[in-house]
Length: 171
Image (cartoon, rainbow, N blue to C red):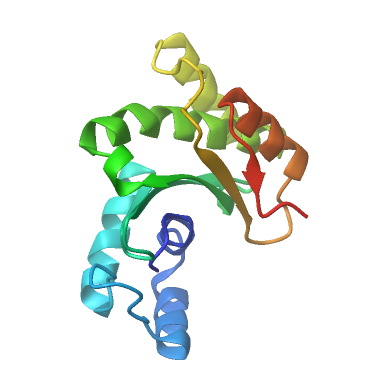
């Protein structure tokens, strides 16, 4: 609930499943910015679901911002998530706006490699619209989070290499 990776996965859960997780695990406050009120979190997750990406605005660790996007599986549901993290001073609103389409493209590419029809369509559209232009993202890292064992480390590594980064959380 406090990370961009977690938010994109939670945002796509059925309401009952989300409520069960909140009841079981609670909403621990990691920093003053952590969303720890269930109603506020649900509202934020609705925005994440609508936008297709999440921002961790120093909610997990002070001084760190993180963007996350869902990786869709063959059933067109998130099976994993991918993120780019950077010091908050280097990830302002303009930087977030520049990174979001690139991160979504990487997530869609991995989803396509996992058999997601959503990823294939979205990636093709992003390329044809000229929205995505891959390049180095300074020295930022891509974090790959596998939710249901469907993740493909090799696909994540290829996406990370597109960005000049590295994959964290490797098997």
